[in-house]
Length: 86
Image 1 (cartoon, rainbow, N blue to C red):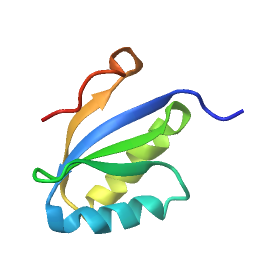
Image 2 (cartoon, rainbow, N blue to C red):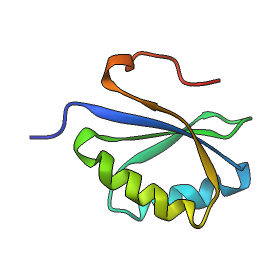
Image 3 (spheres, rainbow, N blue to C red):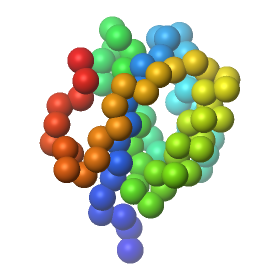
């Protein structure tokens, strides 16, 4: 049965690093996907299933060794309808 709930993380990184970030994330066999929520500030939303959240955090730690980025927010299920950070 596919997961019905997801976790969302918001990251900020340098605009010139966004393609490499997406490439490195996609290389992890559909662990998560990312989309740009604020192009000017280069804020990415990264979405994964709740069951894969630990694996995603580990993958992000490995990616962070290659590309510097900062966590802006980690959304829980209780604030799933909250707006993304500005």
